[in-house]
Length: 162
Image (cartoon, rainbow, N blue to C red; front, side, top):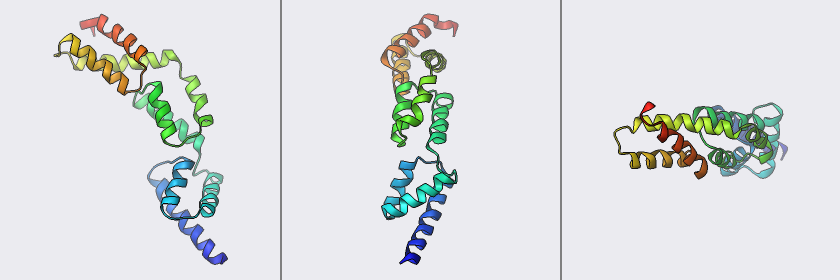
């Protein structure tokens, strides 16, 4: 029986490394992938523990990387950031400190920058439709209605100076 268990662990280990080679995952995501592949809970726990011990699986680093990507590269607002972090299966204690460091001013500045770009790119559209387009864009990016309105007011008042 130990040989069968060791063989199963080895297969799960190799599968996990292949998955992680493609893209980083949270512990929960890897656990789900192992279960989908048909590995038992015991095998999954042993493999996940070993992956964490060796540094191949780290929820804090994954949360930091995803947070950075969502804020810097994708310019997402707070609600979309929280949604994505939860969707990836990251425990709140891994990303809550990151969100606390992301100030309202940072979110506003980032939203203002992407709204200005969107406003300029829609310069052939009448003002009312342009405002709706930019507002809806900000909402889809995860900015609150109040913040999107505040940003839109700033951008539309600046008008053609942009």
